[in-house]
Structure formats: C-alpha cells, structure tokens
Image (tube, rainbow, N blue to C red):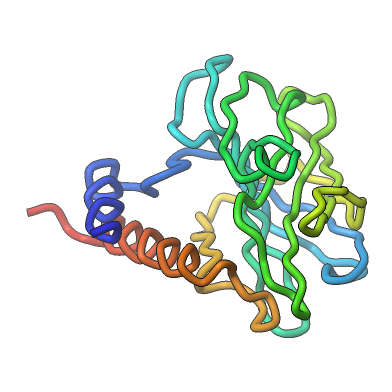
Amino acid sequence: MLSTVFRLIARVRNDRALHPRGVQLTGELTGTEPFPAAATVTARLSKGAGTGPGKPDVLGLALRVPTASGDWDLLLSSTGTGQRTRLLPKFVRHWRDARLGTLAPYRYRDELLWFMAVPDDGELPGRFTLHVSGRDAEWRRIADVTLHHEKPVTTPVAFDPVLNRPPEMEMAPHWLAVLREQAYHGSRRGRHQPES
C-alpha cells in the first residue's frame, strides 16, 4: 500500500515523492567513526514539500559519503533534538533555525544511533557539524562538512538510504525499515514510470 502511494506521488510530480527540488553540491567531510577521517561528499539541500522561499517546510540534507564498505546515503530532515522530538519532522522557515536529524535510528555494533546536522548561519548553509547520540539524546560532535556552493552538481544524484548504506549500518527498528523500503521503492518506480 505504502509503495503504491509513494509511486503515485512521484509519478504525478515526475520527481521524488518528497523533497522534489533541491540544490546539489560537492563538499568535504572530516570526521571520526563511523564516518571516514576525510572524504569528498555529494550533498543535496532541499525542502520536503517544495514550498516557496521563506515559507515553513521540512528542510532536508542528503549526504552521499564514501566509506570502505560502500556509499552511505545519509538523509536528514528538520526535527527536534530531544528523546521524543527527534522522531518527528519539524517545519521551519530558515536553515539557521533547523536541526536536521535521521528521524529513525541506525543499529551499529548493537547500539542504536541517531545522527543530526547543525547548519551555519547562512541563507543556504556552507557548513554543517554532524552529531550522534544514543538513546539518551546526548549529542556529541563527530564530523564537519564544508559545502562548495561555487561548484553545483549538474548531474542528478538519486539518494536512497535503503539501497546505499554500509552493511554494518542497519536501519532500525525493523518494522520501520520495511516501511521505508516500501516508500523508497514506490518513489523510484513512480519517477521512472512513463506517462500513460
């Protein structure tokens, strides 16, 4: 059912079901485990519903991070930062007011981890600090990303956290991972389905 809903939304939009328009950039990441020490990343800044400038929306940051075991598409949306509020999308007007989280955790080495990106004060951020927390929602800084706004990426990148993730980064909990897989599968099908 969920796959069908997202397929239809993507087909009508002729684009992603969510976060249909965005700006793609390259960037540099420096970090600590589970991120690489240094890597060139592809990033996408977007709005969930695609509302106009200055209007509230769920802001999104997608990162494609190369790792030793494969590309990792880390997708983050504006959320709260507490134990409960980090599970819910949050509408904001400006990037400087956003805290962008993974909504659902990853299971890594038998521990549940949430990730969060904090932007700088720019209208379109040039830098993010990445943080991680466990169940306690005590965030610690583990990486920095600097984006190159002067070098936009012209070839669209299809970010997909279901298909592109290191095997040691398991999506959790299992029931939510299944729903996400259905949603992304439907969105992929809708974007590539010809008009009748």
